[in-house]
Amino acid sequence: MELPSKYLQEAVEAIASLPGIGRKSALRLTLHLLRRDNLEVNQFANAITSMKENVKFCEICGNISDGPKCNICTQAKRDQSVICVVEDLRDVLAIESTQLFQGLYHVLGGIISPMDGIGPSDLNISSLFGRVESGKVSEIILALNATMEGDTTSFYLYKKLESFECKVTSIARGVSIGDELQYTDEITLGRSIQHRTPFEQTLSR
Image (cartoon, rainbow, N blue to C red; front, top):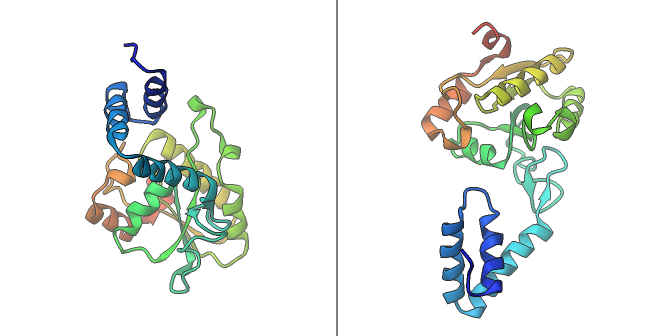
């Protein structure tokens, strides 16, 4: 449907380009912004621009950060010998909400997906091996989504980590096959972290 203003049209198209937002929702949000006063709209636009310009990725784990290192990697109380490997920030937030994990993280920034043209070299993987090579890591927890792509990525990492002297574990399958960590309730996810198992045991299932 043609809108009466090209500026409105452009705003709707911009918002509709966001994942999970259809054209009708985009139009509703755009009309809402149009009713807000200029100060509020400018604050909204400035917040988005500021985020894009200033958000960084932690030089250690790849998590989102305001500085060179994220607030998790800089916490002295964290167990530096245990690293939990996750897909993205949403999984870090989900696990942190359980308050049951006190190790560090490694954010891959995605998962291996040949159908989407995403291979190991497109992910934050090489730095993970660098962290393990330091000799300070005793356990790697593979906490990727229980999907075909997630399992493929976990298996790839497991095979690459076999040559290192560290334990490789996987979160317990309290998280159902096909589920994403960010949508799993805190109790189930917390138990899955606590009752993790050696990764090789998952290969026989």
